[in-house]
Image (cartoon, rainbow, N blue to C red; front, side, top):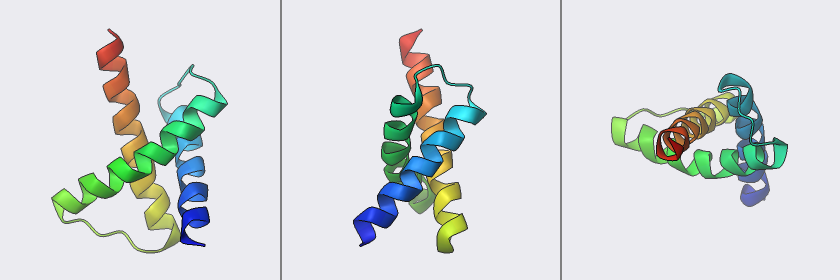
Length: 78
């Protein structure tokens, strides 16, 4: 059940990151980015010692990770 929760949070975060960063990668790309960004966000928040609890905290963490990943991909592409 946790895997389904993680995937749903990642999908929402990818969608939000696509809106925030005005991504032109398409919906499927943004959703996949959100799932990977959720992992990155959790890792980054762990390094900084920031803990975000609950559904809203998980979405914020995943969105921050997805935005960071999208920004990194833009830098690499240029």
